[in-house]
Each structure stands twice: as structure tokens, then as C-alpha cells.
Image 1 (tube, rainbow, N blue to C red):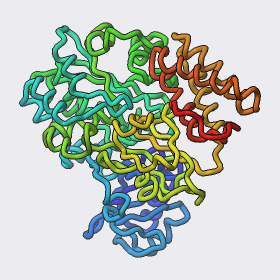
Image 2: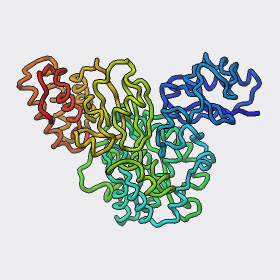
Image 3: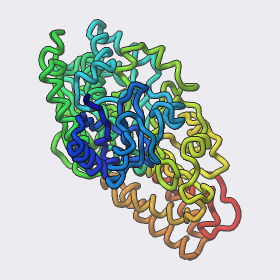
Image 4: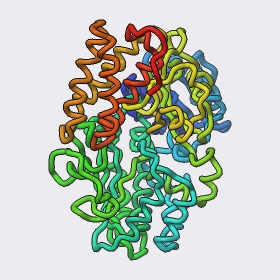
Length: 517
């Protein structure tokens, strides 16, 4: 009898020893004469339980974690291959509340399948969306995406269907699909988890986009810091070509779509779509003026779709089950689900895919379990390094694009970084301004010079120099950045700076509540 054992090959699991645990299990099984099939699946996103070990039993998958090399022999002694009891036993993995209470659509296969096994992907509803799309016109595909209410999951939340429709209706002999996989926001990892844990879903989503708008070439612009994703994507792309899911005749349809991965060079600004295209063209990553929009004149001056990993990975299920199915999740204009990423000072860090509408407080405490330190959570930064710092008084805000915008905050890419009451919010504000200073492409003056002056002014405030002059000066400077910057890097840096100043004035040595921005 051969037992199926699953240990994540996800970078987060590898970082805490998953490779060593996998090797130890192989060696122990050989030593005991037991036949096992070891599968390196994607992570379930329960990071405090990594390395998370799962074994296939007649009762379903039984989980154990967090497993270390020293635990392996005892697990065999406890007959874990048959679901035996052990101190690390977690029971049926699907019954864990952290997973059971989620609504996994985009992440439906991650942790379940072998990420680079095409047959496994197809057996778990893979490529059904593409097959449906090939029997539809481009306009019909775009209508399904539009009807779903899908919006850009990279942070801008622009309606995906509108962008696709613009490219569809712009005549050109050559069009492009670009996946923005330059996931550089602090506290975010959902893109990485998809690329490492289910790369075929991204490939399928990009292929559907190409078929929809008449684009024959796609590029995944991947951040250089993701070597595990790079390897998984290249293996999956090679297998997709070999099986006819990519190439000049996509599964016999007569339609063409080619795909390749290109690596970035570590610049945060290249997550902005126009500087990304400059980089792809072999130039320095500088932000372009708009118009023209990339959908009309993008890569090499041709109509181009630029979408985030999660946006494109959400397309296959929309084309499989229909736009209305996806739209039935969520609230208001925020439809579908969002993979939220819990990080920072949080007891249970991990990936939570849930429909829009849950409150931030529910996410932090029902899933996150409160702070890892056991102290009160003082502030949460949602939406990456350019997101606002939200105080406890705003924790009952529903996770919804418009609800966040109404309180001058951003949901962004869904990264959630928690801080307990020992954090100095003035230092966090300075860090945010310094981040802008370091990462600015330098093209526009408000961002290039404004961020440098901003660090100086915040330092003066922290050191107690002339507060009566420097506080209004900082606000005025933020107003210039907000309204005068060429892109969102300079334009959004005031969000964390002013939110820290407005909600935590005492950390700046300023008495009383400051005026709202």
C-alpha cells in the first residue's frame, strides 16, 4: 500500500524547514519499509502551523502541525499515515474553522493539488473556464467578466471588464496581456501563493484574457525576490505548451496565445503599470504620463491589458461558473472574494479568502486571534506601505472598497499588518515617507523632492523642534504630494503619514486630536 503525504513547497513553509521535514519523512519511510508518495502541495495559508503535514486517509485528509524534523519518528510511531493520534494532530484539515469558514474561489485548489501536475489541475476543474471561453465570442467573454463585478485586485480596484472591453475595441495587429506579479507591498503574499501553489490557474486566466481581446502574447512580470514562483511558473508553462494549452493552436481552437516570465530587478515603482511596461521594454522603470492609457497604447505602443495575479487568477472560475455566480459574493460594488493576508503582530498569520463585507475587527480577532504579543492592537495598516494606519475606532469598518474610501483608507491588495500598543506611530509615519523617498523613480518633483523634505520635517516634529510651524508644514507638503504626484507612490504616501498624525497625535508630541485630513 502506498500512502499519499502532503508537505507544502511554498516559500513560507520552506523558510521554517518544510524541505528538511520532507526529507526526514522520506528517510524514515524507507527505513521502515513503508511506501509513500510525497507531494509538495501549495500552502493552505495557515502559516502558524507550518510545516503543515497532511496524509490522505479513507476519512479524508488528516493534518499535523507545526511539524519539525524531530517530530517525524514519533509521527510514524503514532501511525500518522492512518490518521493516528499525536500531540500535533489537528484532525480533518477541511474542518479547521480557519479554513472551513472561508469562501475559497480563487484559492480553491491551493493546498489540495500538486501545483505543477497538469492532470491534477484538470481533475480539480482546471481549464473548464478556457474551454467555455473558446466557444464564445470575445465580447461574450468580456461581458461575463464585466457581469461578475470583478475589479482590479492589485489595489486600484478598477473594473476589470471595462479595461478588457477597451482593449477588445481598440484595433491593432498586435495586443498584449501583462500580469503584474511585482508584489512588493509589505504584508502581502497572495500573488506568491497562487504562483507557487496553483500556477496553472494564472496561465488559464491569462489565456482567457488573450482569447477575449485578441492578444497573442502574454508576459508575467515577476519580482526577482520570488525564485520559488519563478520555477513553478516556468515548469507549468512548459507543461501547458506540451499539452496544447499554450501555443499557436490552443487545444485545437485555431487561436494563438504565447506566454513567458520576465523578471524585475527589485524596484518597487515597477509595480506601477506604466513603469512596469518601460522595464519590460528594456528601459529604466520610469512612470509614463497618461493619457494614452495602456489599454490603448501600452507595451511597445500596442493595446495592453495589465492585471494583477489575483485578478487574472479569478477569471477561470468566472468563465466556468458564470459572472452571476461570482457576483453573488460580496457587498455593494465590491463583488466576489478577496484573499486577505494577515501579517505583523498577529497570533494567527495567514491567508483568508472571504467575500467582501466582513469587518476588519472580525478578521483581526475571529481569524487572526488578536496580537501575537497578547497586548491590545493599536493600529492596523491595510493596503500595503501606502495604506492608511487605522485605529481601533475604525475596526468595525466592513472590508469593502467604498467603505474604506469613505474613511480615507484603502483596501488595496488586501495586506493587513497589525501593530500592538508598543508601536510609535510617529516613527511609522517617518518610515512611510522614507519608503517613498527610497523607492521614488524621480520623474516628478513632488515625489522626488517632497518625500525627502517630508522625512526632514517629520524628524523635526519627532525631535520636538518648532511644532507650531512643522505640523502645518507637513500637512501642506502632504497636500502637494497627494495632488501633484505623477503616480500613486507619491500620491498615496500622505495616507499613512496623515492617518498616523490624525489618529495618534500624542505619538508626535502634539496635544489633542489633530484636524482630519
